[in-house]
Image (tube, rainbow, N blue to C red; front, top):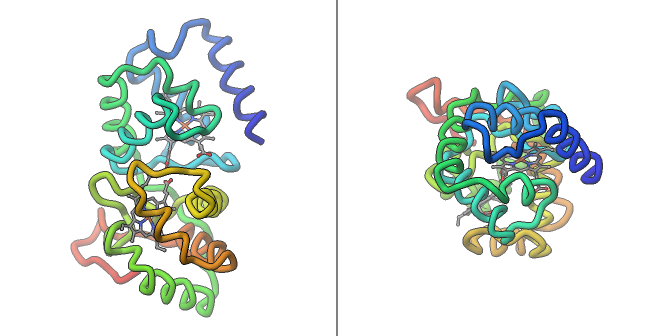
Length: 202
Ligand code: HEC
Ligand code: HEC
């Protein structure tokens, strides 16, 4: 899968014939969204949705990709030639995309189990009561299930370092069998934060 994604980036760059960095931010963004989904929702396996993602988080991750502190093909290549200004303007534009479409609701018992885990590990204390993220901490509501599973497994095994170690510490205590429970729940969790004044309990 990773190979395939890398390949499509190459073809993409080749077909337009100019490096990503030589283009204005709006054109760069359309290259990004060819993988990440035009309307904020990714349709591609293992490629995260970016809609309504917190701009400070996006800047932090693009920096980590650029500096090869987060190793993930094809993003290290994609970020390699982006200037600090590019990172900022791409992150701004990304944060204004609509929030991702959520997956189909899961059955009540599974939702209850996930909510208990979320309360136990206090996910909302960092990711926001509505799991829509805050500041440098990402939105996780409505993210793709396969990507969420990979992210949590990556933190747990320390294959994915964070810009700070919070997630590596949190996920160390999460049992392997609870990771898919959390991922399925978060993927279908509809955050109301941007539309309503009242923040529901995740
Ligand atoms: C060829 C497909 C592809 C292209 C083009 C692409 N990305 Fe990505 N992007 C990915 C994949 C795959 C990941 C997940 C990497 C991983 O496994 O952690 C990712 C991860 C990210 C993340 C981290 C999201 C998170 O929730 O942590 C950000 C931010 C991002 N990309 C932004 C961009 C931007 C900005 C561009 C354009 C300059 C871009 N991407 C172009 C495939 C792509
Ligand atoms: C102490 C604060 C804190 C707590 C508690 C916390 N997180 Fe996080 N989380 C973070 C930070 C900071 C990051 C970004 C780290 C990085 O750079 O990768 C993050 C990243 C993530 C990501 C990656 C998102 C992406 O787009 O790549 C997922 C998934 C996630 N957290 C899920 C959870 C879940 C589920 C819980 C509860 C079981 C939880 N977090 C509890 C601070 C926290």
